[in-house]
Image 1 (cartoon, helix red, strand yellow):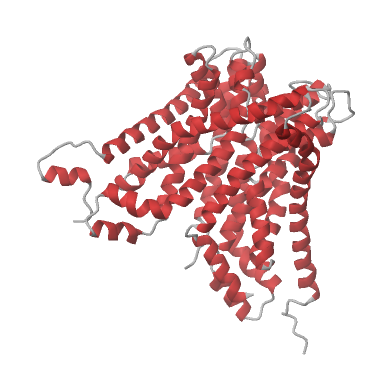
Image 2: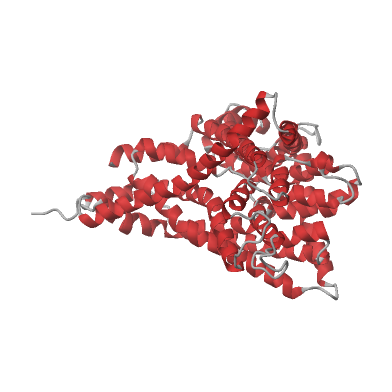
Length: 285
Length: 289
């Protein structure tokens, strides 16, 4: 017989219940699970209610979802290659000291709140309230760029953490066969890291899609300087729509459906990412 | 005979330097915007902390900062015992079964939810329930609810990384499960647990969406008792005619510095602990380059 739990030990001595750490932990777990169930039930119930509504603006909701995915995908398309290159630099090329500096900087910057990046975006793009001649396309590209700025540090640190764990023996054999650094990267490290890279892309997508502040700030500034129609623009993403639903009462009822939609999308993307992580070959460490 | 496999070949050199250039360029962009923030925001921020003659609007910053930290810490204090308790229970007390797997999947999913969903929860469930005038309580509860799944999954993950031998040895010495957890596992895992909790706090404290949602729940009342630093920055950047005012730069810089302090503390905690990833990396570097 292996390790007994406290309860089993007590049962063998005839006692049935004693107040102890286990009970407290059970209570904590039960409370936690109840809170989390409340969140899930709240969102799902609201979404079901809004589906039952007659005048649901499904076209607008669909458009918001497409906008969210498009902007986030743009951000990942920009951030992933750059992040991959940086991660390869740190794990394969950089001297120890600059790798450490780079790693610290990336880690620190991954904590910068997205409001700050949105603010910088507003300042640099010069939305001042007076009318600026800018097309909706340009603002959505700007949103993608700013989101890429937000996604790049966590994406890179994820890649670094997992590239580090690629077994040293792989690199050793490559160098032993006379390959150069570049050949080792291209023919040994990259194939071993392919699923990691895909996973990083999907995690980044899920993270970029869930972000609110950057796109919301750009959208508000663009609407205020009447660059774009308020609901028709490409910056009108799901989080923006939900916040406007709360603040101004626009298609209020659709909020829950949109929330469920973004939950499904972002959890779906991170589940895909996790799938790729599982297929990653780890070798023997 | 020319050795084409040496790193000094033309292609290898070009590609290596391209990698180096691109990565430093990317880091440079990040550094540039932080530097820009410091450049524009340091003056206003120093004026706030020095006191004395400064603009009337800058008076708000310091109370706002304290208020943000206060809300964040209150939420953490609520969530910490529950989250860590649940994580410990799931990791150490419950055997492997289907239900536990489901719970863990749900916890991980909830920890990754977009913050706007928690904002919606605070706005639609907590705010009407608690009633008017309870904005602070609503926000604290919302951040606690958001921290909870993060803490559970982090605690579970950190405890799973402790080698089994720690548990086996403690049990062999006659320790109960609780003694094992408290005396054998926590000294090993505590540092990275604290680090992960700090990272979660930095994320929750810097997020705007829940605050915007909760502030929108009572349109009749001014959002003043609720204002946190990120919310204030969002409001004043979006609503003022000139987003590039010194006051906004001061706010942004203070926000960045606060988050970086949290993150730096987390990094520091993790570095001095027993770190498996770092050591593998260093060993590799020492051996092959």
